[in-house]
Image (cartoon, rainbow, N blue to C red):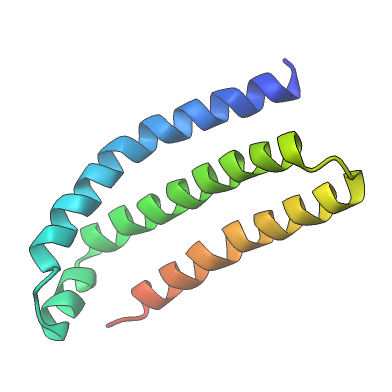
Length: 108
């Protein structure tokens, strides 16, 4: 299978995974939007909320990295710059959600 085909399939599968997680996030965000800090901590203290939010972040950043790398491939013609931009994007897409997930799991 070609690299571009694999990338396209990963993009489509991550978007399918992201749809129910986005729906869950929006519903819960609306419910905790005007809540106090204690209510927010209580929400993220539940294991189910931690796991679903972690899955949401991981799939969102994975989707983000795939789509932005496509933009890099289309519009950056210098191979060195494209390589640095893609590597920086991948590092960002790994560090940011993992840092957030670690913070959420250490809330207790």
